Every structure is written in C-alpha cells, then in structure tokens.
Image (cartoon, rainbow, N blue to C red; front, side, top):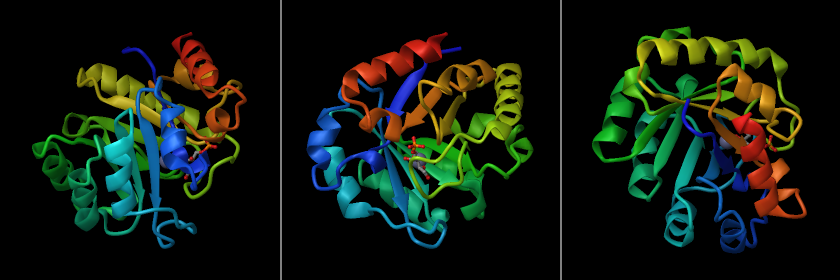
Length: 218
Ligand code: DX5
Ligand code: ZN
C-alpha cells in the first residue's frame, strides 16, 4: 500500500483567515475543501470563486469534495477553478464514468464518494475509471461528528477489490478521523485520511499532521 496521505479539512479552519490556515497545513499532502449546497446536505459553505482564490494561495494541492446536487454539471467547473482532485458523490451523479473521464481528460484527479449507507459494490468493476474512492465515515454535512464504526467492512471490501484489480486506486476516508480512530481505519485499508476538527482543533497543527501520519503508517 502506498504511504498514507493526510488531507486536513478546512471546514474546521477559521473562515475569516483561510489563507493563514492553509499556510498552517503546508506539511500536509493536500487541503480538503468541502463544498456544500444546502440541498445535497443541510449546510452551505463556499463555492467556485472562493475555491479559485484558495487554489491560487494554497501551499498544497486542493482536494475538493463536492457535496452538491447535479455534479455532472458542476464538477468540471471546479477542475477549471484549479482543484487538483475533484470528488463527486455517487448519489448526486447520473453518469459517474462519463464525469470521471471528463475530469481526467483535463488532467484533474477524479474521485467518487459514497455516503455511509451507499454500497460500494456497483463501483468495484469500475475502479480503473477513478483515481480515488471516498468512503464517508460520517453523514456528510458537518465536521466534528463521531466515526461510524459500521463503515469499516466497506473499506475492507474496497481494499480487497483495489488490490485484486491492481489499479492503485486510492481509498479516502472522511469523518471522525482522529488519533483514536486512524490506526484501525488504516488497518481496514484506507490510505488517504481527511481530518478537520482533529487537525485544526490541535494546539500544534503541524505536529498533529505528523502524528496522524505516523499512526496511519502503523
Ligand atoms: C463533512 C465533511 C468533512 C469534515 C470532516 O461532511 O465532508 O470533510 O470536515 O470533519 P471531522 O474530521 O471533524 O469529522
Ligand atoms: Zn469532506
């Protein structure tokens, strides 16, 4: 398995100081940016013009997580805004393979996300079409929720399928990742870890990123 990556979620950053809080995570592998539309999830965060500016000032690539309806229409615009990778939800997409191909053809990494209750099985034969699968380990919408233990078997099945297919598809987890949970999530097979409240709630953000990376490496 490749080295674990830590993607702090700026949902837990200070929205009045986003540039400063991006600088604080310069040692991370990417910045996770949660875009919410008040329809797919009951929360509203930020959109295209903000992502565009964040991409210009960020010291690390942007991993944009779209929690929005009609991803087929909007996801490509986030790639154009400068996202290094764009994650769309399976539940909000009509044609996930067409969308992933469109994103990748423009040089952006494509990722499909699954809510905790959404099955991974429909995607197991399509792993070569995406760069990453995001298994949501809380219901999307808010930071600071507790990890849903029942998502671990889905991560294990996905890891077995990725290894069998030999596609190198990354397995990302998002929600409730902390010092307490990260080791067993890594053991189940995830290799990209989003952490919002754990990183930005720490006294020393850089030390927290290093510690999460150490615990994930096992
Ligand atoms: C929730 C977002 C997450 C959120 C995670 O819907 O997708 O990225 O920031 O927050 P924590 O790490 O606090 O659970
Ligand atoms: Zn997220």
